[in-house]
Image 1 (tube, rainbow, N blue to C red):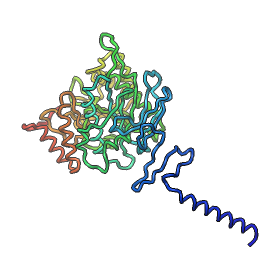
Image 2: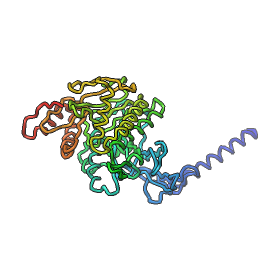
Image 3: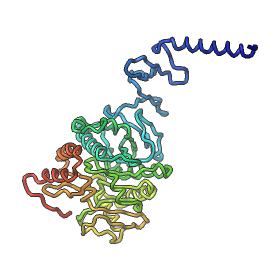
Image 4: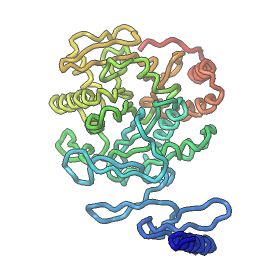
Length: 426
């Protein structure tokens, strides 16, 4: 053996001895190297848990973020604790364009595209009495959408909240007790894909006397829609998402993605109408194609500009009145006197509109009215809100049976209330 081979052999022996001595060190006393986040791996007989020693409050596995403005750290927590997931939009008191840096929560990610179901919700610090009822409505809307969604292929579902700087959303305990087992807790799954779009300016408005008010208003809701669609339009086309804006008093009966499958790729914006001559278009459910997000943003900006120009009320009926302005721009293309499943028309700005009847995609279950066999969405407007939980409870109990016909029959038994249901014309 020459000298060169002897040196290699000695070097190999030294390496083996070093590895043997390292493996003898107990796991509990072994520290992670610098630059790895300072995590300590505990020697747990069941499952190892990564602990961040920098966490002052002792929460396991939480990530902390630092605000550039205040330097304050905030921890990401599950939805059940009322702390947001991803945060977008304007910061407090900001008047800049609605960009904002994304803050991602700890939890599973949802790469690629998805269909976004989005609710507008805003609570002032003094609105304690409203909080429970609003959280229950939002919970029923999100969980029914989540549990009726097939989730196959690219047809993923994600959830968004358009709100102010302080409102947090929690899954209502009353609603969560009814959730069937679907291979995980829906509240946790929703939390992992929940995004907050915070825009402070949209909640400030003036009443008829010119008094400045901060609170929920319809014009602010529409402006929020425009901001969200503008953000989608700024993304690469492959990552843009279809968006369904809904009121909080919605219960889904079937997969919302079926709407985009039915409507095809030719429309920019989809609305629902009913045979009600005074206010035919209802804005409780509005569908927007992700690939046409720029057109959608342009459409909503036209709605906002028309709303302001005509000085419509910012609370009740304002949304109905601005939709009537839209009908005038369509020049008689839309037939609201006859029940037609789908109608296509083009407004004066070149926006391709798909207008569908509310029977299938925005049905309001008025007393003693028959629920259509292919109803996908129930909308509990006005006084109907008091019945929303009763219907949600029925839907949750029927979902595991996977029996659409049986579900419709059960809903009609609720509708009957001891009388015979009738086919209502609206």
